[in-house]
Image (cartoon, rainbow, N blue to C red; front, side, top):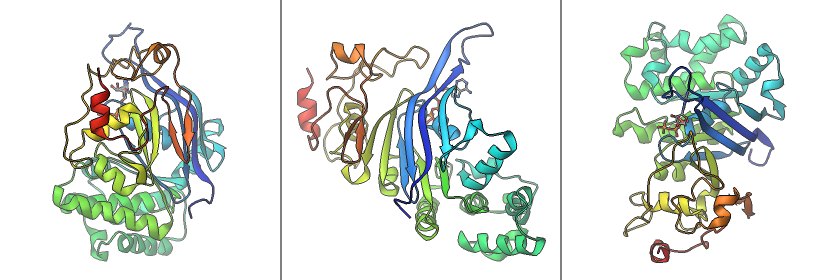
Amino acid sequence: MKGAGSVLELKDVHVVYKARSGGLFSRDRVHALTAANLTVDAGETVGVVGESGCGKSTLAKVLVGLERPTSGTVAYHGRDLWTLGESERRTLIGTGVGLVFQDPSTALNRRLPVRQVLRDPLNVHRRGTPAQRDARVRELLDLVGLPAGVAEALPGQLSGGQRQRVAVARALALEPALLIADEPTSALDVSVRAQILNLLLDLKERLGLALVFVSHDIQTVRRMSDRVVTMYLGRIVEQTPAQAVPLGARHPYTRALFSATPGLISPINPIPLVGTVPSATRPPSGCPFRTRCWRADDLCAAEMPEARSDEGHLFHCHHPVAAGATDVELIQERP
Ligand SMILES: Nc1ncnc2c1ncn2[C@@H]1O[C@H](COP(=O)(O)OP(=O)(O)OP(=O)(O)O)[C@@H](O)[C@H]1O
């Protein structure tokens, strides 16, 4: 399926929220997503990483049409979501993209048996006859490795792993081309995490799905993805082919993030960063990372770097790290 065209395309997307902390009359604004450009091709897995608060969930919400961008466009199969009428947009989102949330216990209606949970999207979008919908429910349970008997259970009677399988089945009910998984295993027991990740990988192969996988677990993202997207303070700063992670990453922030991940590069110390992440209400001028970057100069403060491209690799940096530079070399570079 890969190479069969783009399923989803974000162009210059900004999301600006009114700050929660500022009080009723505050003019403070949070720049949760800034100038985001992202394309997801058919059959491709894109992993999104970054520290807490960098905008990963906002990006996921924009991708599934739950958050309307303040500006910019979001297109599914070339159709701009937010120029469509509401019912057309709902149909395009409902049938085009499936969403798997972090916590299956809150994502599933506790009062409905699994059969109803899975029939719900089929009813809403009027797919098939009642008998065909029942058949689809059986097919979906089989697809996610659950026995047919689970159809009669309430979500509360299932284990966390089984509930997440039901959530995945529901996301696939209308045969979307794209699945968005926002931290799909972080609420689960460690023992079942691998099973859910393997299920997602298996489904992606079998169904030719495109997958956007959001996680702070870089090891998992690397394992799952074709491309790793790094975010910092609301910006996509780098898109690295997964096979180039970690030493092929060119943005100093991506390298620092990867070097702090246990087991990704061993066995040395992480590249130390000075200071903390600036407030998203007052992001720095120019490059958002420049206040913490050991390579930054006046140019970085004056201008946000344009995307530079190198064989499927995109990075926004005026002074990128050499491909293949080791952590030791980068640590020694620091003043
Ligand atoms: N509805 C909202 N109103 C105001 N600010 C918000 C809102 N949602 C998110 N934010 C802010 O936007 C920024 C990005 O948040 P987001 O949840 O997208 O980050 P994240 O990378 O997913 O974080 P985490 O990993 O902790 O979930 C943060 O500064 C957050 O506080």
